[in-house]
Image 1: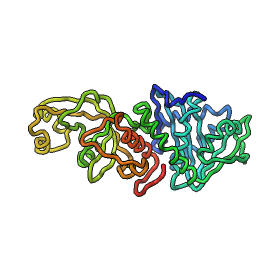
Image 2: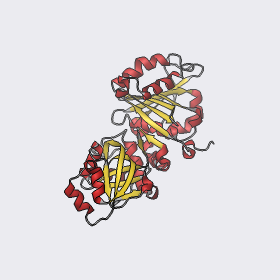
Image 3: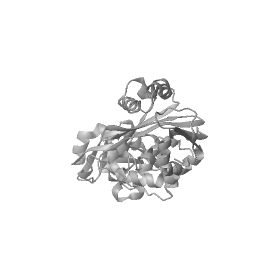
Image 4: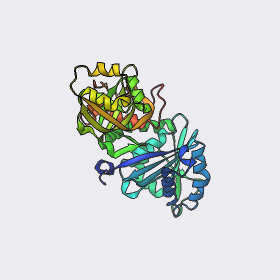
Length: 354
């Protein structure tokens, strides 16, 4: 068996979701998806026609969802899902050198999660030879039986059809979540989904008023009494404290500048996001403070309450007074990875299974 490619990966792997917005113009992600699908034309004659007549209109109508995986910025994985009560994994192509590892688990989990709440059944077709090679993988997602597909699109290999209840597939995804989340938290900055990084960098507690300003781009400098320059260039996950108690997004630490309170205010005042009175109260009696300059601010599409993370991970999470280094706090590293994974899957009014 090959060594798990993700576990040994020393370069960047990121996943981008191709959305309706990408179809309004020829975005880089849409272009990558088209190129990856078109490369299958020799094996699937007519796949380009399917792309133009089914996939693109489906993305525009939000009837389909697609993903592209990049290894070292090179497109390497393409996936397309048809939504609806009778959902279909229309297409999944993983570059050969990325096969036999967790990449398949990642994409099957994302594909299944993207139809949660919509699908009663999920099905897909595949060549007979692939079923024979990967039968244990498919069965791990509750796809246990196959029949001959009614339509044959592949050249030179009989196509089979496999179906399973969506609820059963999602149960399988849930069973795999600890394994996947643990891996994500280990990969850190080398593994991203839609621009969000997994369990890398630090987790910082911020008052809800200021956390909201950061996410809106109205506050680009966070003040701490002391902060190390070693974190420059890393990701900071923003935890909005009580009463919100949620992960709300992330940013990159662009710079850390130490100075007297008066010097820091003079240089960064408009970007600190508070009144001079609030600033003076916080920095009172301090001879020196640190200005943490935030860049590449990335709000989460859905904030993630701490109770939901505790529910999924079956553990208690204690937020930091100031910040945690995620590499030294495995519980929060896994929670941060889960929050990213959930961005593609959930409405948080009630507990769900990813």
